[in-house]
Length: 559
Image (cartoon, rainbow, N blue to C red; front, side, top):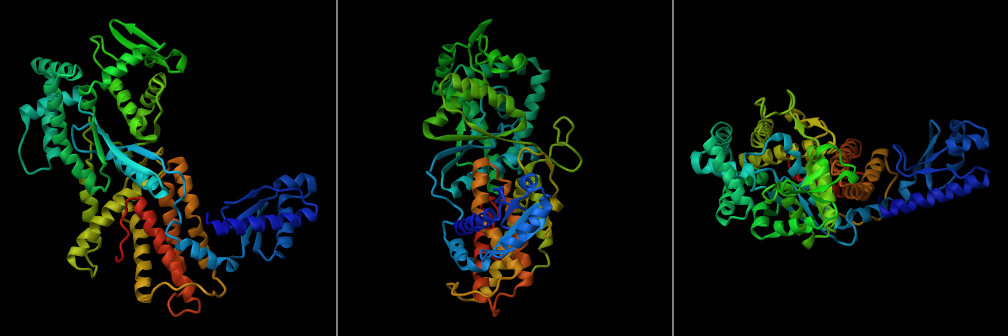
């Protein structure tokens, strides 16, 4: 919360508490973030001592504390005394604080953080079910950077193992040419190879032989799968770029084998007290780690001594902590167990432990997406559809055609990102294009339009933002908007602490709604309070822009 408002509330609380203590009231708990008002006195604990109902106590407190000059009003609501501070006395100082370029960020000691996101197997285009991964990862990186940390993002390219060997075989034998985006072409090569793997013993032998060569460190095999993955990634990177969520770095799993880092991990794990051997394969015995079932045996080598995916994942995370203070992984809900097993293995190697943000998968109207049921919907297709629909909604706009095209893309991609981010990551939801583009709902276009409206007011004002000298009596919608603006630092800190990006769109929607109510009720230019109100518009535009930027949503000057 704003430092000035925090102090005003604390002063009001102390003053009120002192007055109540003189009247014989016991010390009562305070809610500093109530659903209404600036703070609330909780009256229930005093009921037994005073032998009165909480409601009656709240009414008595309300009458008493309204004599205090720091308090504007106090209202009883079911045993809660909800108190508004006198905003007229602090509004000027609050505006000056809001205008500070550092408002919302912090002087926290900067940490070097690596966020790993997306990391989808490079075997075909992204599907919509996992669209949350790059969007959450990219926005979390933006959030932590805004807060003051040094943040990088990374995509871990799974280019070893059976799927990688199958892709390499498919590209070598079935690669097709055409005008389609390269990942959409190559996925057909992968599918043909996958079918052959199931039905053709000769193909199966070749693919499994390639796997052995990869895992044993054969340079030719490693280069083959790495180059095949890079071909597929060309198209996948285009999708991430369109989504405004491309990772800064790409780390190839094959490099861990080629550089001997995996072999080093195997040697160290064999020294663990938990290490056991079974038919030539080595594993960690996790009975004492509260891991159930067959997962109690955490294998890190095959019977032939070669590594597994999990072994390479351990080596990858050890590499992360050589360069970063913290590592954060964005993972689907189906990776919880794998993440826990990774933590245990890293603890055995005395390594730092990564943090994980888990998300539920996106559904579309009609049910869950399923490869077997043929209900896979590609992210590329959804992005194309939502931008086209945004373009249709702009057809009657007076903007020139090039600007319409640019704005349609900003609205479409922004709507997709916002709609996904507004739901808490752990909760599943169904993505609906029409809902995402609804100008009147909890959507990116609604907040983008609010920013454009604030920009228009500032253009029409046509002068530099004045320094505040005085204000007239504030209207309710002015106070409501000002109160919401002062909560921005609290929202940022909570989001950073919890690694929860969904707080940002929820806040941005509230801010947009409050700004529109203010716009409806309070003329800005040439009003008696124009000096204060134009500053309020400026601050609203500033925080809307910063909030939308964290979400990866453009903040247009005109719509």
